[in-house]
Picture 1 (cartoon, helix red, strand yellow):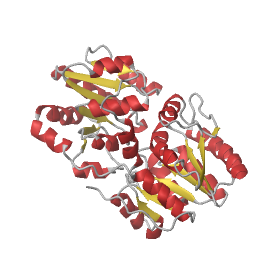
Picture 2 (cartoon, rainbow, N blue to C red; picture 1 turned 45 degrees about the vertical axis):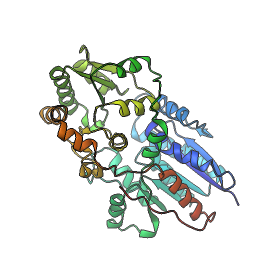
Picture 3 (cartoon, rainbow, N blue to C red; picture 1 turned 90 degrees about the vertical axis):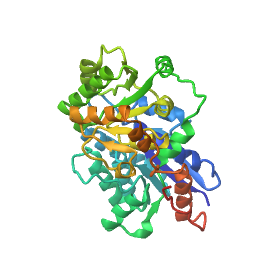
Picture 4 (spheres, helix red, strand yellow; picture 1 turned 90 degrees about the horizontal axis):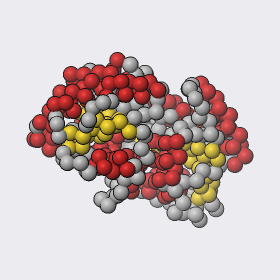
Length: 384
């Protein structure tokens, strides 16, 4: 008998990481009636990601508004999701990661006694306010979850230490790896014309992102000063920065980085452009969570401009360097990778600890087994 699986997400990172799962669910129409619900917690960037994976939501709550607060998103999402879940009565709900949408989807599943699957379970920084609010969000979702899809053995270990039953935890690999491998193409033509021209310039390409709320203000200023010094001191660099739409980020970025002939501030770019930019870069500087995973796919050293990480596997493997946010630390970390070929080579050859491109297939197989649609479970992901 066909089972109804509802996939709920609301931001671009969620869409890109759940996109391969939706595609995999839809390969089994005899098993699953797949419903996609988006809250619209993000808007333009979410729509770009939906288009990249050819996903047309069955419901879009269109919640995003100017200067939205966490309280607004939470109350509006719970109310909207509760109504739809009550009507549709799915057999299982899937959420992803650490957003307000994930928390709200988990709460509504709990309210209606519907089994919940949490993709990317078990990530921890063990710092209440870093990253904020994600660290608490992911803990809340895990408490509500029946099927804990841990991307790595370390995330499973963290869940076990917190008392979660081993039989509810599955090491699947990270779906971000699936998405990146599906999206990167050697013959890719960038949709953003300026980006196309920048990636064809001679010299070394540096991709950067910065958007974390806990870095607003002085930490971000220090990061940007370091990057400007980096461009000044390495004349072969082309730095490409798609600037986040947050007014706080925009103001800081344009005040400190504009006017430099080799630092290029772009409007946000769509997911395929971003993935193919990463794969063509020499070095990546970021305060992002997801880029820590994507950089390892393409063997690109990443200088992480944060004080903590919930993905320590990449730091342990040597693929990511945790630099913090102070100007001198960021500058020295990046500059040494540009000067020291041996150090660069060590980071670029580090083992990818996050996935093998088959996470979505494993997750869908586990869902099918949990719903009585197949007998056997897939093998767990093991890093190289």
